Length: 238
Image 1: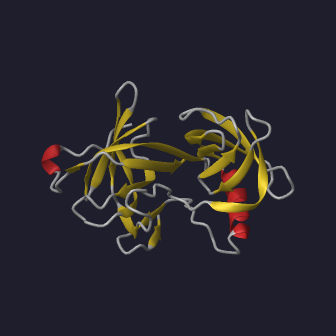
Image 2: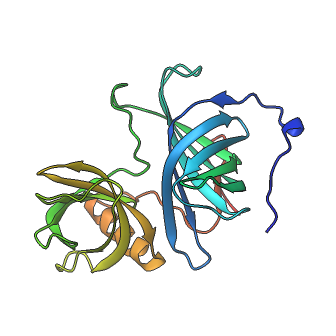
Image 3: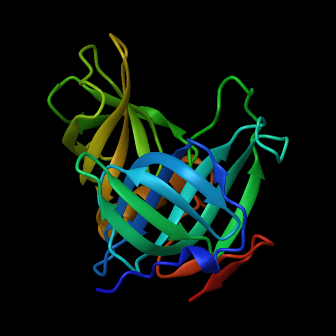
């Protein structure tokens, strides 16, 4: 597949060199939601170049989230949520360099203290009852969760970066849902924060319904099909 690269001479937007945490998510043709994390190399109004833990297909539509600190020229910390297309993917041995266009963007004010940047793209909702989870520790329980992540209570958390298969629920409250996750943060001996890096369409549906009930009918943000956020924050279906 041909790369959608943009020659340097065609770039008119100034590029800001900045190493910021980025989370990218996309959907396969079968509706499976995938996520990857990394760091930006530079940002412009029309695109971003970043380093990710796995490759992306050229031309793929993605959604990504970046927390912009107040130290940048904008002045105020904001969470930037964008949609775009993968222009180029380069194998850099231990990571992948990805160029992504910005087709739509939405800036949301970051309400958390400046020394604690909010990098969550989805709000976690506390479960009314501890949800069992099948993982290496049979005593583990889910304390809170979102469409993209969960906090797993166990006294022997796994190391950061460990990929694991989880089965959420199966307690009469939440149907048993298989997801592939990665450990992002540990707090021995309390538990670990995990991110769902591969979620099937059916699993996303069950999580959506469960979280809607937990939030008293408030719909939890999700994205399916091909949608783009405009500068005004409106969603356009593609």
